[in-house]
Length: 95
Image (cartoon, rainbow, N blue to C red; front, side, top):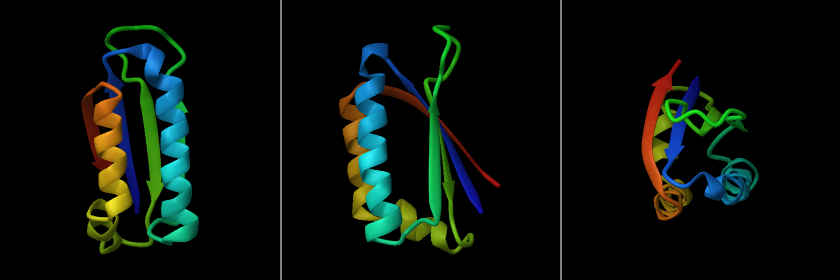
């Protein structure tokens, strides 16, 4: 299963910091806690107000793994820290 999230930030100067934070936490979720199988993310390359800023792809073993991931303390920490960097919007799709 893939869990895909789009993030939008108020301050575009925070995107580098957001990317570093994402990598740090998702490496733990993958390698230390074994909550996810894999992840990847990309930062938007165009400065367009209607565009989202970061896309995150999370690979999970199954649909049953989604609530384990969503409720994991590291995931909750990630969301709080992203909010602290000025997260103003997010959209999710699970496929």
